[in-house]
Image: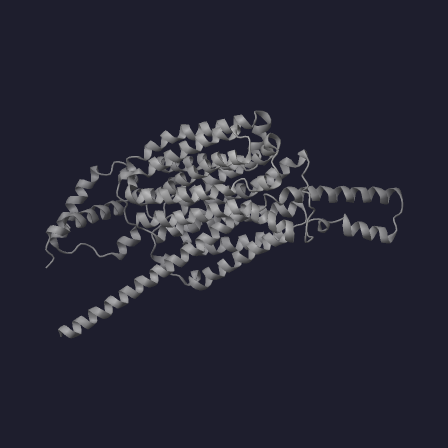
Length: 532
């Protein structure tokens, strides 16, 4: 009997180990899929930076040629051969944008086109801002993988449209469609990481990796798009990104099988997004995410023109402005993750330090007089953004764990809204501020805003010292208390817990509080209780 019992125990242990190993493999695969999706989204956002100005300028040339041809036709008859030459050279954008090699000297749009370019750049973030409240609720109801697949599909379609667009209206539609895909892919991807990595240290590490991919996509996209555009034409950068998006979606569809996943049936109902939006702690975090990204969002559309005027920068310097900042951004992610492992209760301090760093760096930008001097404050800005994002994105999941039900779609939709506010205003408002007040005043204002916001994160000091709770799903899957001793200790901890969690109040889910108190009792009293 003992031999049979030992064999049965051994088989169950092997089965459990195999199941855990399979779960870890799937979790890592999901992390890879999400990181690729975030990389693609941010590359799609920034890849048009070196392409769109030339595109709009070529569009103006084509329109002028068409108007000139129409005037000539009205004044005098045009032979058939001449009309065919006009239609193949100046009548369409294929003359300049779809050739294998654009003009060696870049064309620049007229000043009157600045608004059109700004609206085009901002349209993605504006639609993303409008869709996020709906996408967050949708994610909470259907789970994380299906919205991620929808987002990848929409991103693929919008990128294909961008590749073959031949007029401003089509460009605007494709750019807006990218925002729709991002509202689903970004929010569901980050929420999926928070859901799969429940341990605080693992969650910080996984979200840090995701942030590294986000920064890499944003910083490498302009030189990637500019080089491929110069040597291969307008379509190639978008076709490459569309192909990667298609592969990522197929990998998600084949490996995870989202439509056959029934795990959502046992998931708890998430907290409505409007309740999360009025939570004071979530509001503080969302405000910090918006404030820290304003310098990056406002400098991207304005710094190239300022570099041209003040330091006579050439094309490669303007194209590689942000690329050196990738290293300090990754360094900031790494440092924050390591510090959070040792001192997790200081997440608010890391965010405040990041805001102060961004503020000081923003004030230094106007004093730079050459490219290499400029890289120093820009690296400081990206390092500070890494501190804020890496510290506060896990804090959003932590706030949901300790105050609500552990479903993360809506709370990360709020985070995406915070980013979208900055990037929707940047291309439209930044240029007007520079025109009305000056580039120096713009940077001083952004720096002051970040420095003044840093002390507000003190509001998170007490809540960051709380213990995270488990979600209702985990409670249902775990065994309840066994024996009279466990039941008594659980009730004692439950009574004491009423004054141990001052921020929860009536808003905190009672089941989460019950489980947290019981878990504390089992951890502290397991050493002096004999289960035999």
